[in-house]
Image (cartoon, rainbow, N blue to C red):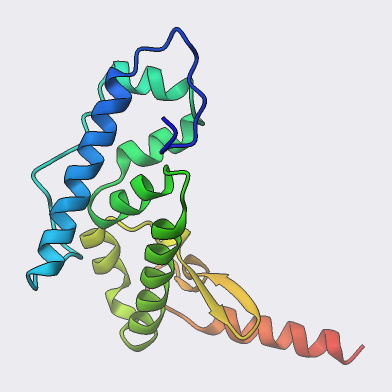
Length: 169
């Protein structure tokens, strides 16, 4: 539990937490092996799955916020890897992976905005969690998605107009 940086109540049986850790390691290994041998990781569906049984959810709810548990349970693919990494007390791998995904998505989606929905569905990435830095301002990628699912920079243009008009005051 030190790996997850959580304090465990003495009455808690750690079997399910250990299983979560083991499942996480096998999922990480599947992605590592795929990447190491030239495979695509954006649409990898590893054979190992986290078994979110009632006992695991009950045990985790004693240790962390239920919103995080729900997000982890609903996640799939690459986004699940990110969320599993986020659980660890050492955040280096999580931060590096999230920044790499942010940068790659921002670059790709600025060139191919029609791919956003496909990428989100294929990778399991929640675009509400992806940020892009433009100048000194950080935006959420979801801010640029129109109601019909397309990327629009009108939000950015409107924000620039607001900034310009406030600097005129």
